[in-house]
Image (cartoon, rainbow, N blue to C red):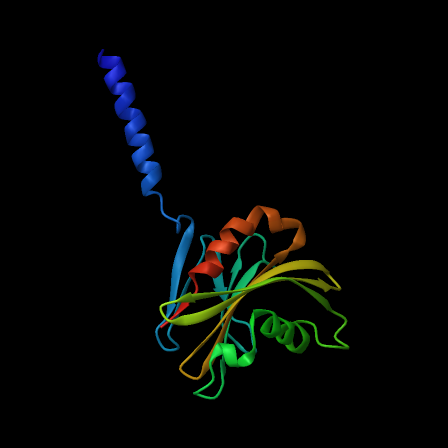
Length: 179
């Protein structure tokens, strides 16, 4: 009888612990209190300095080409994300103007574009692949407008690693929030 009770208690404890497991397991928080945004990034990633327009960049210490970055751009204070177009239009503008402009030798394919609203803010979630001279990459981005600024969080990995990192990367882009 005691063994049954102990086994039942262990099963209940195991189920309780699984239910308590967080969606942020394996992720660390980053917050920029000056620009007003936050996101989660994978454990084992470190910040790096990249000259240019990125506000912050983290990369994997082992697979150094995997990275997450945030770019903050000024726009007019009354511009809303929907004023820039629907998710597909914004994605095409990003791909054609920034990711793979003509004569860059790069090609980009839009795989998905969607919209979500959180705390009265509209976010566009974009997924695309990019053919670079060094190989094909799989990218996710989240775009949002707040206080006259356009925020773009982007994650990138070699296409060969996409299926392995997809669940974690999806949690990262879903965690991006402006305040």
